[in-house]
Each structure stands twice: as C-alpha cells, then as structure tokens.
Image 1 (cartoon, rainbow, N blue to C red):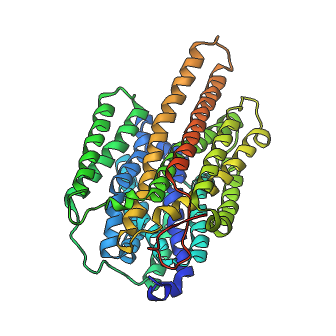
Image 2: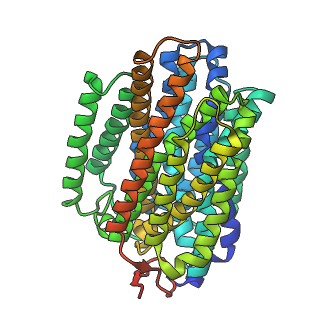
Image 3: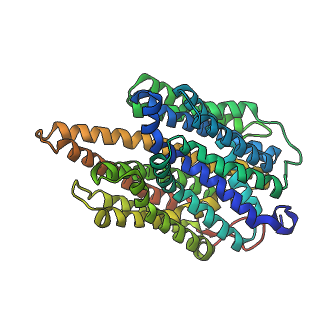
Length: 488
C-alpha cells in the first residue's frame, strides 16, 4: 500500500511517539516489578515461595494470549486494540498499586498480562503498517528496537528510584503516567483500519495456542521453583508439546487460521523469530545474575545498579540507530544478527572472568558495552525482518510472534539458567572446605557458570541465524507487503 493511501501516514511521527511509550511500558514492567518485590513482600507479608507468582502470573497471561491478541488487532483494527490494551493495562496497574493482599496483587499482574498481550502486538503492528517508506521504516524500527533492548535496564533504574524514594506501589502506579496520555493521544491520532471482510475468529486455534503456550510457560516456571523432574513440570511440558502440535495441525486445515503458516514459511521471518527467541534466552543471564552481582558482591544500591546498566542502554541506542538507518538497507539482516550474536557471546565470556574482588569498571562495564552493541545489531533487524513482506491483514499476528518468541525465550532462560546456577552453587559449596567466604565465592561461581551457558546459547544463535536467514535486503519499493530481494 502506498504511503499516501494510509490514513495514519501523515501523523506517522506522532504515532511513533505513542508506540514508543507503549513499548517502553510493556518492556520495563518486568524488571521494574522485580526491584519492588522485596518491599512488597515485607508490606503484604507473603512467603518466599509465593513471591515468584507475582512474576509468573504476568508471564502466563501475557505469553499464552499473545497470538490471540495479535489476531484481534488484525480483525477489528489496531486502533481499538491498542487503546483498549493501554486502558486495561493502566487499570490493572492501579489495582496492583493499591493492593492490600497478595491475592489482589497477583490477580492484577495477571490482568496486566492479558492487556499486555493485546497491546504489544498492536504496537508493533501499527509500526509496521504506518512506516512503509524504506528509509523512514529503518529509522522507526531503530527507535523501536532500541526501546525493546533498553527497556529492561531502564526498568531497573526507575524501579530502584521509585522504591527507594517513594514506595514499591509506585512501580505499578507509574504505568498510569505512560498509558493514559498514550491512550488519549492514540484516540486523537489513529484511524482504525479493520479487516475488510472480518473473518470469524479461529476458536479451536485460539484455545489450543493459549493452552499450549500457558502449559509451556508454566512448565518452565515450575522447573525453576521445583525441578525438571517434578511431576507438574513434566506434565505441563508434555501438554505443551501435544497442544502446540495440535494447534499447527489445525492451522493447516482451517479457512481462517489464527496463525497463517505462511507467516512462518518465509526464511527471513523464521530466522528473525528464532533469533529473537535465542537472544531472549541468553539475555536473561545478563539482567538477573549481573543485577545480583552488582548488589550483593559489589554492594551497589538499587539506584546504583540501575545506573550501572545505563552504558548498556546507551550502546544499544547508538548502535540500533546506526544499523537501522545506514547499514541494514545495504547489507540486510543476516550479517547484523550474526554479528550481534557473536558480540553477545564475547560479552558473556568476558563476564565469566568475574570474581569476588572484580571491579565494575574493569570487568562489568566492558561486557555491558559489548552486549549493547550486540543487541543493537540483533533487535532492530530482527523486528524489521519479522514483519517485512507480511500482508497487512497478517501484521498483527506476525507482531505477536515476535513477542511470543521473546516471552518463551525469557521463560526458557529463567528456568534453564536458574537451575544451572543453583546446581553450580551447590556443587561448588559441597566440594570446597567451609570458610567465611565460601557462600559468596560459590555464588559468584554460579554466576560465571550461567554466563558460560549464555555464551554458548549466543554462539548457537549465530549458527542458526546464519544458516536460516538468506542474504537479503529490503526492496526499494514502497509498501509493507513488498517482497525482499536478494542482495548481490
């Protein structure tokens, strides 16, 4: 579709602003709540075993409903799903901030996940359909990719500031400052474009995908808190395989599938989805274990920890914009995504050298800068490739696949790396003589083992992306549905 035929095109830069606000809110919400957990636990009096449900409730609802949320935007128009997601997310955040019990807090987090699953695909779908000119598209996706890569670090800083200065409740209330102004602006700026035929929703596909993704995320979450051999873990992961297998079988046969398999069939898009998922697995190690290391070993406060991650954010922002605007049109996504994976592996290998006496400037900072450059090479090209060449009617579900792969990758990373970390700490402590420093030394050893695994994951990602994604660059023609052409 030529740019002038899109009623949103003339307002595209203002629309990018509200999309950026929405994306930032969704991305930072995970880490900002993590910072608030100890204070919330002390205030509401719930147990350590219950604490993980504040994170898991959001992940379950968000991860299991993303495909349905993306398809709703395709069918009914992304203006209303975007605004509905913003308003619902803000209401759920207000309820969570005012929660007087653990049950209310968990329920509000689940509601945040439901509305986030509607909001996130709509935001990326709006971006993909609003920016169709290749040069402008690169700039827009560079900004979007930078936000996606830096949101977690910003969440750590903002969460630390709000928790220390105000209260843990403001880590939830702050979403109203993002969501409500963005919803008002979206109501005034966006023109709704529903599917002209509005086919019926694929109910069997929606139930199977939601059930399968719920079981997958729950299984990984349960393995983190119990074990890989726990009956619930085995049953849930087994159910996920069966339900998702049935989902793909159904999608091959129904007239109007929830996830048209043509979205996955393209090698560039398929490789982008895989790259986003693999990066999600490995990135978990950086934020979780490095946060613990800076606070517990280096003695940083929550605010200092958030500030410590700012070089990562700066490197992502600069790299993402250079890659999207200048390099991606010339070289295509494959070399950048492979380079990003390699740099991610090098950053993790740098962190394997951490010890109990290591310094921030000498050991942590170089790894953060390397990781920032690597993520700036992965996220913007992957987001563009994942939605490039998709029919307008399928943009929402393609965008949902991006978020689904991020969520599933994060869940796998949480379970896999947390269990490896715990095993490494236990093994080290049992094989060394007791001493006052043993616990701290064993803990740092656990971090470094997790970083070794994360480096291996990035290395596998480089091979996978290099093998799947063809050598392509975006076509010079206008239109979101333009086909890629081979780069010579």
